[in-house]
Image 1 (cartoon, rainbow, N blue to C red):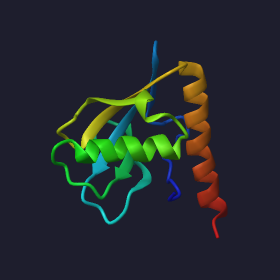
Image 2: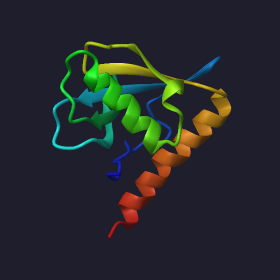
Image 3: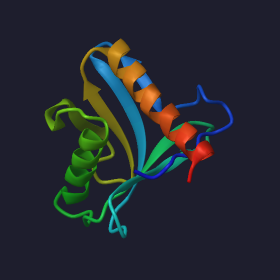
Amino acid sequence: MAALSLPANPAGLPLTTVADGVRVALRVTPRAGRNAITGLALTADGGVVLKVAVTAAPEGGRANDAVIKLLAKAWSLPKSALSIIVGTADRNKLLHIAGAPDELTRRLTDRLRSERQDQRTGP
């Protein structure tokens, strides 16, 4: 997985805790050269999104399915726990991950921060 470049504010992650899980703001690039989490980006309104690239075309939900498959594998979560709740036909999406909010937030924050550390100490 590619190393992530976090914004200066490390608390500025694309995660929102909700009663039944966590939501992650995404910016998806379909028809990419490879399937990968490519980083974090700031939005025009000051928010943060997780950038994801998938090789699938944005037709018939194939790109959305590829995003779910990629993130479930990267984060060691069951695909059934992930669903796109906003932006199914847009490159900006809101992903819902069902589960214990505190555990998911900790787990995803740790993953994003460890990627940042890998980038700093890289090869």
